[in-house]
Length: 166
Ligand code: FES
Image 1 (cartoon, rainbow, N blue to C red):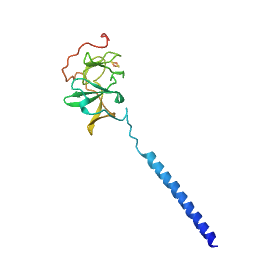
Image 2: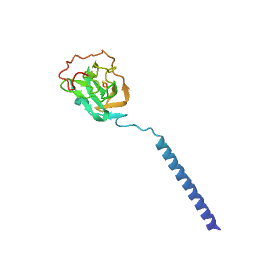
Image 3: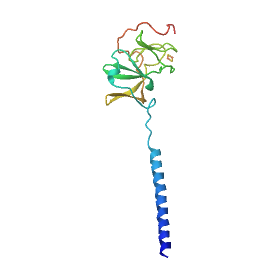
Image 4: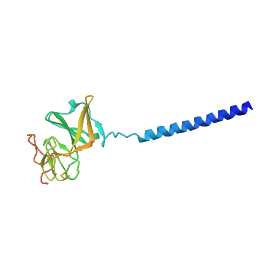
C-alpha cells in the first residue's frame, strides 16, 4: 500500500516537474523571440573608428556604411554614397576634390553640397554620434541633403575624373 502511494506521489511530482520545464521553455522562447533585433551594418549602426581618421580636407570611405566621412565646420559628417538624383553610386574624385556622379554628371563638393547637374539636392546624410572615441554612423536615420544653391565651402574644383559633357 505504502509503495503504491509513494509511486503515485513520485509520478505526480514528475509530471508537475515536466509541465514546469515545458512552461519555462515556452516563456523563454517567447521572450527571446519578442526581443527587438538591433541591425548592425548597413540599415543600422556602423562603427567607423576614431574621429582622428577623418581627414580635415578629404573624405574617408566607410564601405560597410556606404558612406563617406568628412569634416564640415569642425563636425564629422556622414554622406551617403548614393546620388540623390536616381541613386547611382557616387565616387569621390581626388583630382577634382568633389563627388562626380557617373550616371548624369551631377557634382557635389567635399561636404556633399550640390554644385552642378540634375540632382534635386545635396547628398543625403546619416546621423553620427561619437561613442567611446568611435564614430557611429546610424544608417537607419537618413537626413535629406541640403537644398540647391547652399554651397557653404569655397574649395575650387580641379581636374574632373568623369568626362565632361553630360
Ligand atoms: Fe546621379 Fe543622375 S543618378 S546625376
